[in-house]
Amino acid sequence: MGSDALPRFTAGLADVPDALLEALSAPLVDHHVHTCFAGPLGRAEFEASLNEASPDPVPPFLTQFDGQLGFAVRRWCAPLLGLEPHAPADRYWARRMELGDEVVARTFLRSAGVDRWIVDPGYGGDRIVSTGTLAAWSGAPCSEVVRLEALGEELLASGVSAGDYPAAFRERLADPGSDVVGAKSIVAYRCGFDLEWSPPDDSVVRAEVRRWAAATGSAAPAMRSPLLSVFGIHAAVQAGLPVQLHVGLGDRDLDLHRVDPMLLLGLLRQPAVQRVPVLLLHCYPYHRQAGYLAQAFPSVYFDVGLAVNHVGVRSVEVVAEALELAPFAKQLYSSDAWGPPELHLLGSVLWRRAMARVLARWVREGDWALPDAVRVVHMIGRGNAERVYGLPR
Ligand SMILES: [Zn+2]
Image 1 (cartoon, rainbow, N blue to C red):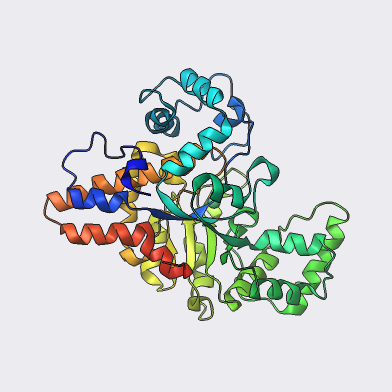
Image 2: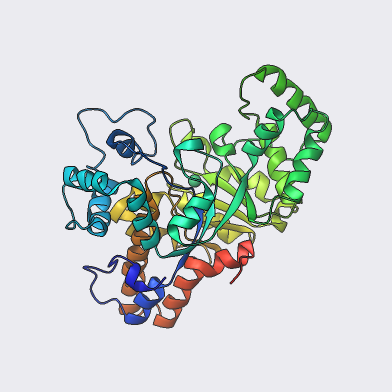
């Protein structure tokens, strides 16, 4: 996709060198993303989806349009629906309804300037479209990651016995399917990171699965066992898969104070774990810790997805902070969009704008050379993801 399809992400930015604009217009690899709503989508659900942390309905005294993300939607998404920038929320919503969910989704997905999505398909059920539909609507291929907790739940639900569980789990990861390029754990959500990170013996795993199965009965199993998540992560490491870990910001189910990535030191120091890439996802507000870990361990990578959307124009500062300690080969682009296709677009627009502002200033003031700025855009925008996941080039 060329720069024509992108919204004018440079509008209002002064003195951004052409070479940098050109580099930022190149297609991105979105290395951590989910699919979008299948529709029909109501305004209440749309607005609730602009809030990452609260599972409650939007209270009557406020609208989620009045926040950084809501302002960014009105600024950058409205023009793609034929409205003026900053169109009022009611007008935006009316236009969205008029066009219909699929047209809106196709418009935003195709305008994101992304030519490969690495999708976590494990959350959202029938509220969101399939990975195949995301590929069709966006015109860009998808790769996938295996969600480790979902794999455990699937094995238990399909009747795999506690005795067979460790081998069955490893077998699935050894042959996860041709589209799969990594594994992902949401242990942050289920348990936090203050865990015993040594690989558990299979006998201990079997006993834990037996307890889990007994407690679950006929209900749909939800894996909340730290031990089984830790087993799953080590199994993915053994299979040689890059391992993504949800870090930082999430909904309030997650104990944010227990997902500081510094609590991962006990895992990251293990020599076996250092043999595969470990990708710390989103990380905000711990992105500086993530940058430290990416400097400290050759195997550790990170991104500031999700936050870039939710902090809107303040993504300039978040992106600048992400460019502090870590070598530039250790950071990746992601939107972490889930639900409204506005988020798939906005992640890319806000990241591109932030990079343009931050890097143009450093070039202008003589701290960075322009060719270096161009190289760093390509590294973070796609090259690092291609290398880490072994993507086709
Ligand atoms: Zn995510």
